Figure (cartoon, rainbow, N blue to C red):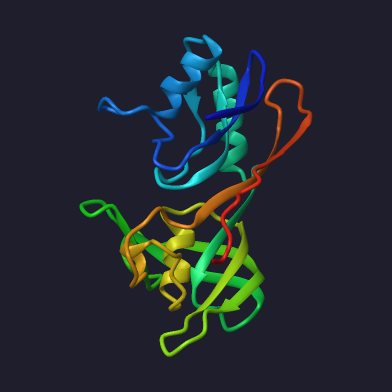
Length: 214
């Protein structure tokens, strides 16, 4: 874990892949316990989440007032989040907006594309642009690309589902259509912008994700 910024109200950190973003019920490290240990604080509140296998920028509240204000800001669309992902495939358009309805299966902890009339359906929107692409060559050559993603909504496994359902799964994400070997999925939260819950100052932090098309 790397701390990018901290004060009495918030901590902005880089969450490593493989670490839970919220308190864990096992003996493995989680971000809440790591922040407590690193900053010597007793209160740490989760205001947004990343999948356990995803790395990237996160902000945590260090008191109840900051937690309430950040949670309201996140729920109201006040967080600006950008992601990068490596896809096994290339979308039909080099940039655009994807809109679907998704429903979460609580038993399997997976989401899927559904119709608007499906019980529990929630609209999911994101924008994307291809920033790099490559053909691996040979008889079994594959089209790969790196995309930058902006979330308009924040649904369960949204980026993974929306690209996977279009035949462009995230590399390593076997749960959503990747046909190669299971590996840490190639997805990271590379930018987070929000307003400080106390000072109202505009805050923006980035993560220099070093994973590229091989």
